[in-house]
Length: 299
Image (tube, rainbow, N blue to C red):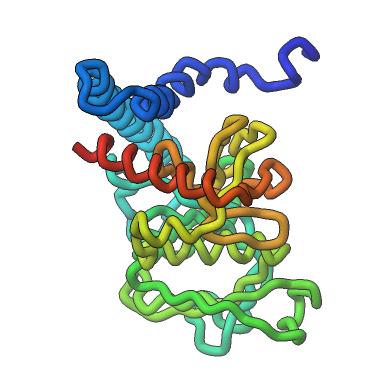
């Protein structure tokens, strides 16, 4: 309906939670405008500390519940067949990215060896394991193999010559499984539909190699302000509200990979939803706010 801004029902159901997560920003602003060394300032900082801890617990609780429900659903959709079953359900596991992608077997790639046929596989990338499947139906998948992320190597391929069957416009990368579910090595060349799609797959597959960026390092990162709300459509995307400030970690072909300043959540979103913050004073204030919010949240 036009009165609802053509937004889906879910965007209204999550409004109460969204408002709670923005309270630390409100209290931080109050702290900045309250004279230091006063009773009011001490009360405000205590309130900021309390609400930050509450928001952190809310976020962790919501994430744990969502992830557990998702793991239960996916466990029922995966058919391991002759492949050794993998216990997917865990409160410490979550989905980073899923989707179809073109593959090209290599000479000695085991189940992906040449002669086994080229086509489409369906990947499930979790924070600790990759499961490679073939789609059986709209909601069921036959597992081909799986490997822990610590046993993966990902290499971007920059070449004008695409393997036969993948198309000249393919954006390739090599995926090496040093140890699959049987302890054997596997190798396959995958073809994404665009540079941004390839960047997102590589980012998910290399999740375990990401290093936490210090506050000082974050001060040098590009910052953007969200000018149009965005609702995440895939597991590796992030939902954003208008006026959110985001630190940019990577960008590729119309997409940003960013970290939301108010809570540290990371994900991809369209560049068209954001405008770069160029005022140096505003950038420095945001970095200072980031540091204060992290200190209060981690107590």
